[in-house]
Image (tube, rainbow, N blue to C red; front, side, top):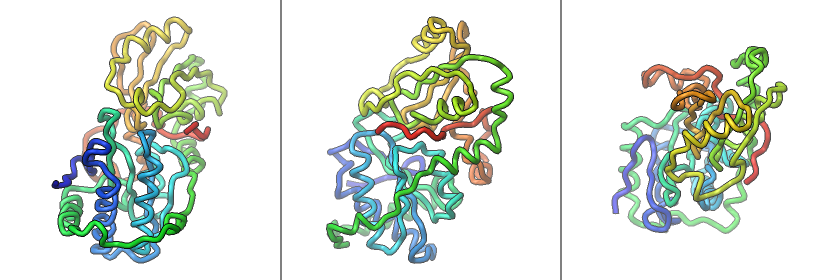
Amino acid sequence: MAIRFGTSGWRATIADEFTFANVRRVTRAICRYLQSIDAKTGSSLVVGYDTRFMGEIFAKLCIEEINSFGFHTLLCNRPTPTPTISHVIRSQKAIGAINFTASHNPPEYSGMKFSTADGAPALPEATKRVEEFIKADENLDAVKVSKNVASGFEDYDPLPTYIADLESKVRFDAIVKAGACYAFDPLWGTGRGYLDYALRQHGIEIATIHDWRDVMSGYAIVNTKQAEIDYSEANGENHTTVYSGEGGRSGSTPSCAGPPSPCVSATSTRSSPASSRRSRGPSTSVTSTSGSARPPRS
């Protein structure tokens, strides 16, 4: 069974191809790739996960393998949106990150997204090398780990630094001056406690719905447009923002208006040259936020 990387990562069905053994294989391959580009022993590698099923367990298996290669692991201490993990890489000068997320795929999927030291998704030339290391790793027991290896990591809270960065970029005073009321739907996913908290910190009224973890509904492919418009109109909100389950995309819907427009784009919050150097097209954000400071419930 060949493991192939798509957009910077590998995604597969849990308990079919996405297994403990394959998580270990992919982690070892990423570590060997990092060694091949002269990553130093003791360098920090970030590990994060979204709210999908067993994300925390997969992350701990990943840490066991990382530690066996001598790298230092920064484990995000809660489900963390992809753009926030990119910010951790840059702010903590890490050599990269492994993020357990399957992005927009259905809930039975999980995945491993590999980002490099610039905070951006690994380019094809990097993921091709990772695939070569995976293919070479035929012995699934190639690296022996002890039961205590997974304890060798640093529990890291990414929110304070991320919010501080947002404070330097977002004109919250202009949002306050607008005097509008807002609704926020994180779709049971990783964006919970981010945008809504950031706005409340500045006295901005916002109603949050679907504010709990649901490993099935949070990643189901559903049409929420009319539901969000109806919610805004019924509750007097002027503006509704909806995040994707993994917190990496968002759209906004003014009440009594048409389809959602990309207004608050999480993908543009990489807050560094990492995104611009890829020439991936124009940003759509005005108030970038995929991160904030109220610890979301797990």
